[in-house]
Length: 122
Image 1 (cartoon, rainbow, N blue to C red):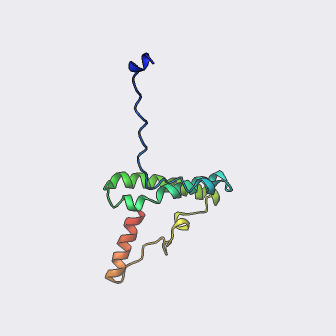
Image 2: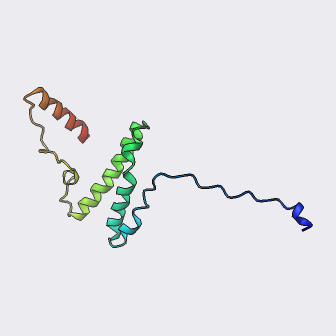
Image 3: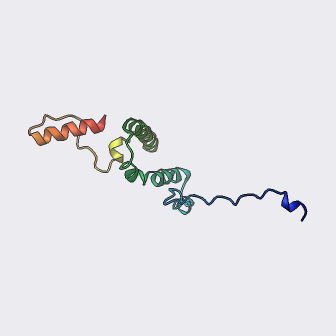
């Protein structure tokens, strides 16, 4: 009791900052029945879900492009390994391109679509 006057009190631990969403929270139960490969793909899925919302409040075009290309490269490499180098990026797209060769646009709308597709591919 004599020393209690001289002992420094320790501050209470800081409360953790509130978090709206943690990407891996819903992943724990999902990866158990799957292989490590599918577990990693599910982790990528969970971690990329908030990107659409985050991109509305931040602008970092070049960093986004470089990082997204690297992620796509890794996904394509995995797909090519899965398909014995037969798979293409088109196999992974929701709406695959109709053709790999550029056609001569016949209308202004077709010209705009061809220009858009060219920019998306590069």
